[in-house]
Image 1 (cartoon, rainbow, N blue to C red):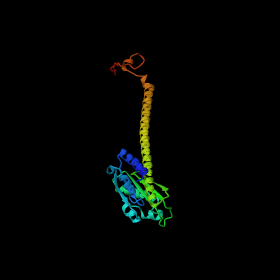
Image 2: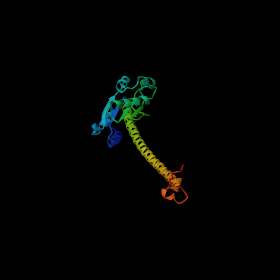
Image 3: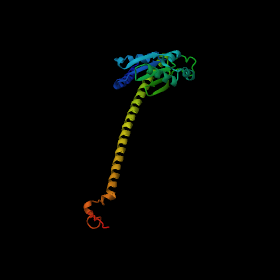
Image 4: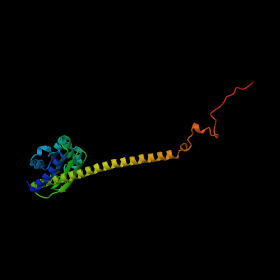
Length: 231
């Protein structure tokens, strides 16, 4: 195994272990090479669940739920099929992320209009999915190793972006909650200010009346003497 590829695989595994994540793999043209590369790393059972090698289109349909109409419209080597392969693997595995690989390793393109060395890598989580494409020039064996290396690099990039996006989403949520609390506090302070102004300006505050003030000659006399009238 190429040291470059193994180093890249180790970088991906470090991220998986750091977050307590598990991964699954669905391969076509690489024939299990990606799964082998990952499981060459000691302790793989803690973060690698299972994998599929769906070389034939029928296998992609029956094992990974790739839609027949997608294969008909886009061809097996396409971004859409790569995404559906990854999503199908993720649905069947107890994993957090899935990687899929579909491409043309050579030495011929078997009637495809796409050139030899073309590969699509799909990455899926439970909330998002993406696919990346590249073209590698080499022998069949060189292309397969190149596809695996590209799949690992793509997975790392997608994983890092997902972590950054998740952190930004958390920060935005926290900021939104803090803004809502601040606005509610400002509204409450404004209500208290208006209530205080209303109390201070109310007329009855300065015109309080009591019974003891009514005998000063300017109001009603509370002592009334009733005299029986004469007929």
